Image (cartoon, rainbow, N blue to C red; front, top):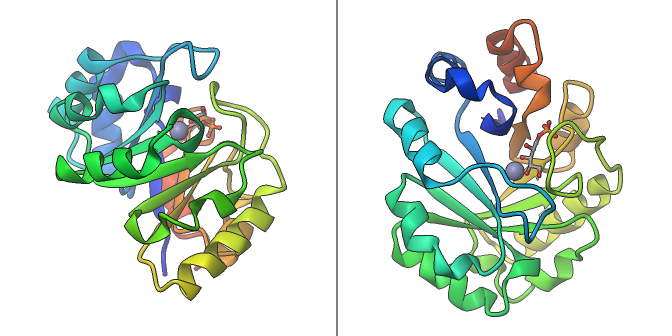
Length: 218
Ligand code: DX5
Ligand code: ZN
């Protein structure tokens, strides 16, 4: 199966957002990955609702919204209203994860949970069937352009086993430091969705780079 490719708009040229989004529309990208950082959960601030809404106006593909914010339950409905198709919260930011997952689903969005590199996938045992997506962070969240953490491979295998043994319908997304070298080993171990920021947007030909990721198994 071909992977879903979700370029991270964080690495795009914000002064030319419309043309960046139109480039993604034309490309083989499946989703637009939208990184929301609050300067509290992570030591960086990205952008919020107005920018998201501006992207939505031009985007012809689903928006995959990755919330790196504390107390995400306060803003779920607003992110949905701003155009989110999938809403992913960090397990480390949720005191009542089960409730927050149900809250996301009640808006009609798909529900995702993201795990930092140090967080065990075993914490998902009791919610895995409820999840449309698990985002395994392969860098410490907060910045684009960081180096891929190799331990991610082990986590993918263990998570894939959990998903299969529980008969769940959950996609595995890998976020951080993805490139053409690690894409194939990630997919071989069971990844379904590849997020790529710098690798796509700093390439001379982003459309070709997205196609290369999409077709890396061919
Ligand atoms: C990191 C973000 C990632 C990041 C990916 O906090 O969640 O989505 O933008 O960018 P690259 O592919 O450059 O690591
Ligand atoms: Zn992300």
